[in-house]
Length: 60
Image 1 (cartoon, rainbow, N blue to C red):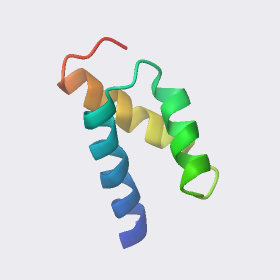
Image 2: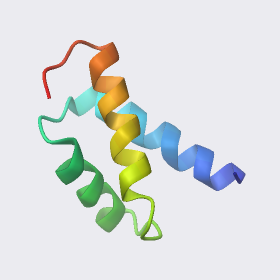
Image 3: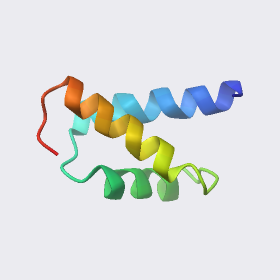
Image 4: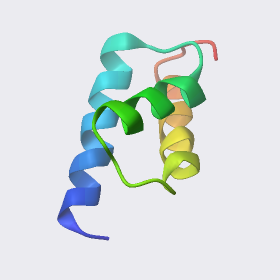
């Protein structure tokens, strides 16, 4: 994967730690729309957010 993809993932994970979303899919969709990320990565990014929330013991 490219450098920009890794930057997007890191930014998303940082925001997920800050906001601790209750609905990861909605959070990712808003992130993709707001920051104009290329469509098609929603499932992968949602999975990353769910993993991060489970690490932090945040109920999903």
